[in-house]
Amino acid sequence: MWYGAEAAPAIMNTPRRVNKIIQVALVEDDAGVRANLAAILNGAPGFQCQAAYPDGHAALKGIPPNRPDVVLMDINLPGMLGPECVRQLKTLAPGLPVLMLTVYDDSEQVFKSLMAGATGYLLKRTPKEKLLEAIREVHGGGAPMSRQIARRVVQFFQEIDQMPATTQRAPEIATLTDREQQVLASLAKGHIYKEIADLLNISFETVRTHVRSIYEKLHVHSRTEAVLKYLGR
Image 1 (cartoon, rainbow, N blue to C red):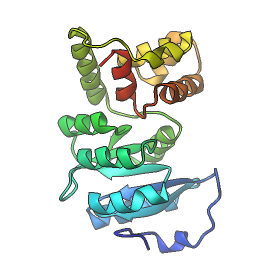
Image 2: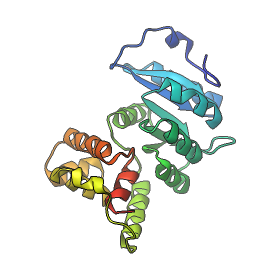
Image 3: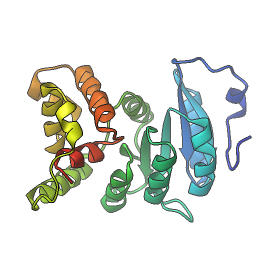
Image 4: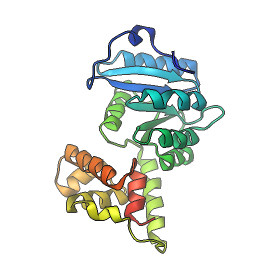
């Protein structure tokens, strides 16, 4: 067993089906919530709880070498809050998507998590079907978040866009295709993937493909990082 990790005993001895099961790591201090989330994942086709960690320190030791597909992380962790854990985890495993979980719609902590590199967030009371859908979306390159948090992100981008630029846009921006630049500009305005698809008259999957390409060309791992490069910050 990994350091500080708990795994569902009925699942851990089962051979992994490559490219068919989304491996999920949990970071949650409440034992009951950990058990419930693990049961949801292990009971759903196409998902597996790879391991569960009770705090950020254990997660930072166990997650990077074992590389799950998605991390579900509580915001209010003991000893090290979620945003700081995300920041350190993204340094150790840059491309790993992290989906934050919270009991309350604490926009300040969620926003800090997103700025640290988290991909999205959900309330813990989210129905099982929505939770699994969000994990699939994150695994596929999406960024699920509430409208309230999306508005805060948009406000942040608008504020920095109004500030005098101290640098020019990142040179990597020139490597983007015209369509990728259109997608990135829409991300900078706070549009979600479905809205971008409608605005540019392309499919949702095409938007996700463009976003993955943008991240790769800009050498970033989150929407926030990509937009900051676009804005020359």
